[in-house]
Image (cartoon, rainbow, N blue to C red; front, side, top):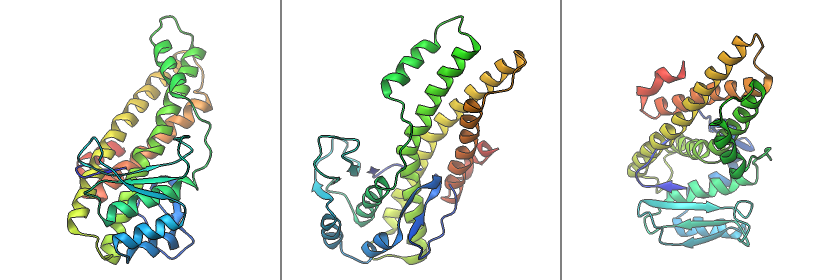
Length: 256
């Protein structure tokens, strides 16, 4: 999904001629397919995408700043095929951005998924008093695993694609990638990055509280919680790295 006034995140991306382009947050997509779009006109880009069985439609979004959206049948079972929706202000950058979402959707590993209902139920249970250490641990894992999974699906993926395309722009100067699109990308990276940082800081705060509870009980923090806390630290550094590399350095202190 791409908006005209938003932004996001981390890790330097090497653009090479390998089979898989490497993105931030462990995301991947076929390099050759991305490169094949770059020199084409927007109409030819759409033709090539549709030839792969991805429907491209022009729509009017409720949000006038929204430029594009990718929808997968895995997330929207009513769809007959993967679909890219474009607004009237969608440009070449937007088309490539949404196409990369489509490429990533076929490469995304199957995660152990926690449903929204399980997450909301855990949030309610967390408010109860007198919970045992084990009960707190179970709720911590459900709540924060869900948050991390959602960030990987949305904010992290948005940031990874935008940061990659910025590197493509500065190194290759693709036809029809404009300075205006680069500025939109920077704002998009900033907004997505700050949204992610807010969630990650909440997770790190929860980690501190849970760790303190286990220390008071004279017990080591279980691996299930420790893995979540480590992931939050790593992802925070990556988000801050992308913000800094995109000219948004004021959040560097959060990477510590």
